[in-house]
Length: 545
Image (cartoon, rainbow, N blue to C red):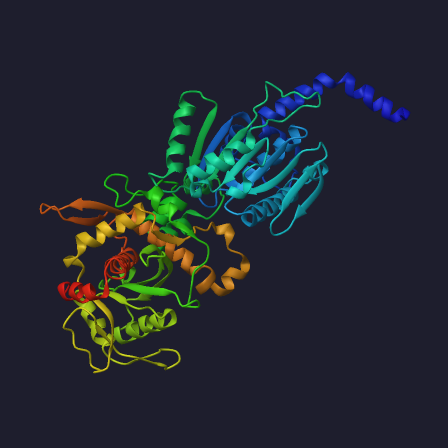
């Protein structure tokens, strides 16, 4: 040992109590430590609400934060993780997200930002490793930050602390089975024991708001109650107004403009931090609806000789916002007995109601041809009779000029213009089968037969996704809007005992829900193998509206 090393060792021992007091101070006031290392220019100076955020995360056993878009919650979350790694030697912490790719992207982006804003933090970092599926930051004191997925693949992993990103997308069963046990083992000191004064096994949750009635909504409420009862937890959050007041995120003018552009539920979740949806007399259990979202990728054509049917809701509103026709593409999955096992909503298409009926008919025929759909269950009520007339004619593709065959109905006395028209359309008058359609939809969700596309967080879309939005982005977004529509619906029982549905927010449409419900009802009623072919003609003959 050199004389210089000896002098350093003596100096450390001499001021050991001062170092201990300083570390304790930093652990309790992380924002003040950041003030000490903040450059005079080119950095971020913390606002009061951000200081409360940081103190909550480092002081308490668990923090549940619900914040709006543009609040800077993710950057603060990663900053808190890095401070934990600096203040607690040899600790292993992880950021979890829907996928490892998502988590890696978040950790890399925010770490690089923090190194830019607070250059002195670079002195604490030994190495970094970032790629598509991996993100790891190693610190001089032996601490490590890495990533995990909110999935069964994380089962059996061990970390001293974890932060769960976009927790509103998390299923309670998955959390209890795969994520909660990750923090079973606390940080161990060099002498082989754990510090009894240290907050170990911490799990914090950060998200934009989700739906009332979901398991995460219940966890959010429980965290609030635990905070009131002094159980060592904190429940914090804010709408867009707090960040905007401090000059963060979009300006008030831009947010108000977004309010007029977004549907009310999307705005309430992303900017108002409201847990939305109808919990009283809700059409379906929102958690069960979210559990249907397991399909990883949409489909755009019939590539494996599968069975498909289409549900179509024809636009009837003259208001531009609601003037949308929707087409739900449903894939029929059968078991060995040819009974319907599952029904997959593999894609949704929207057609502007400003498009005339001949053009709408051509678009729907194009979709039917791509999937070789065996039936098109169409709402022909009211103005919808116009599209039925167009189905009966030969249509021409708007882009290529390709001709599409004429269709006729399989269950009504509608007369097509072409004598050899294909009997592919089920002429549905929804009010005549409304009760059966609603009951069937509820049964499909509750029974787990309906499956839809997964929910993607904003970070899941790469830059390449936006080059091909029609395939990489739009199907997921339209499925999100479908879920919003369903969450906005409540059941009502008529004096006759029949069921009907009402919209909680009247200006929100229900076209995507209607298209899906029609297709599901048709598939279950006429494609399930419990009906033999001889009976099918009798059923079709009886269901003439």
